[in-house]
Image 1 (cartoon, rainbow, N blue to C red):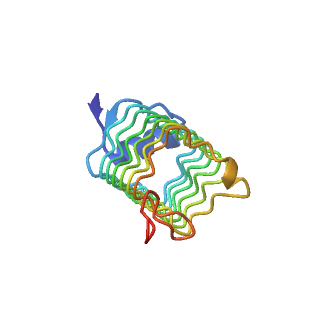
Image 2 (cartoon, rainbow, N blue to C red):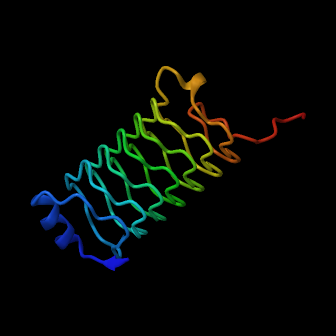
Length: 167
């Protein structure tokens, strides 16, 4: 893994380079950048800021994005398989059609996020907030096989796994 600066990545991306797998970026700020189709597979991006960043079709599988700020980021159709998003801020992010299988979203904030068509098979959503999230028309068909939703706040305000009074 090689350390890279945000400026270096943005400069290379503008020249057409999209391959940044296995890079290390320490507390970088990518806010508002257009990085569609970028490859950050296996990258160390914990604590980075991607607020309002265009990450459509980005390849982020197995990346570390713990405590990253992805507020209002566009992650539509992104590959997020096995990504570590523990404690990440994904408020109002667009994850429509994203592949989020086996990702760790423990404690992530997905309040107001667009989750329509996303695949969450095997994802860990323990203590995640899904309040006011838009699961799309087919929420009842959401692919949450083996997803852990303990303590997740569902769109209707229900806390998943919470016992109801008188039970």
